[in-house]
Length: 240
Image 1 (cartoon, rainbow, N blue to C red):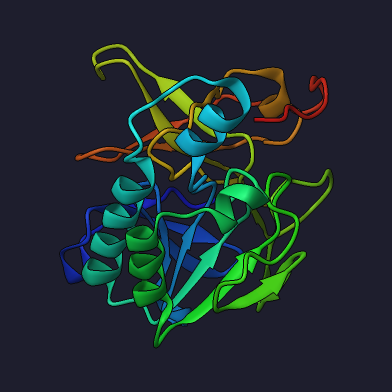
Image 2 (cartoon, helix red, strand yellow; image 1 turned 180 degrees about the horizontal axis):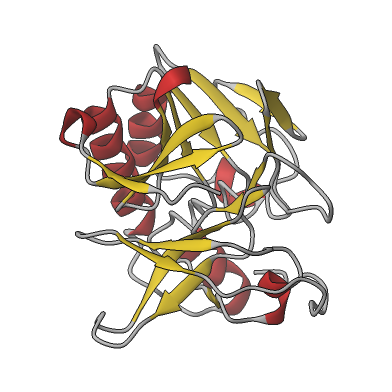
């Protein structure tokens, strides 16, 4: 597996990743840009998370995470000029959250969708259509790549989300959401403003990511580091 390189095309802040004969750019925001297909890929937006927590638990959180996520998404679309967006599942925290979006936030989201090829891949939080424009898929195959929410054992050319990987290194100021990838699969970080994360050292990742493998830590200065993984020690899936 060829070592990824830093990418500065169109002044993007990211790391170029050679993957299954394609070149993908992991952006510092947590989005992935596939220039050959003019496609921006994001996972686990979890729109409406604060509303869902308040509705189910009675715990009040500042209700601005959807707006913050939309603003980040809009900035990435402006930076890349992407004509298409692929959301890798758990775009909404549940179906009620999808139907209960604040009117201003919904209008903002629709304005981003308009004029773009927009794909919603189903997640475990949002298994059905949300009444918004765009195409809905259980999973999606484009060229040599397959896009689904939850990684499947033995897959090749797979991009997924769900696990919200994060990694901390000495001198990096705590943990950061990260991309994890080997020659066969890539797991994207959560893009939503209020989403948590699972340590990249967890056995769930060791069961999926082979060797050699790498991680790209997100942030103002994305950082590429080796990821020491070994398959066969996972303990199943975790629901976020």
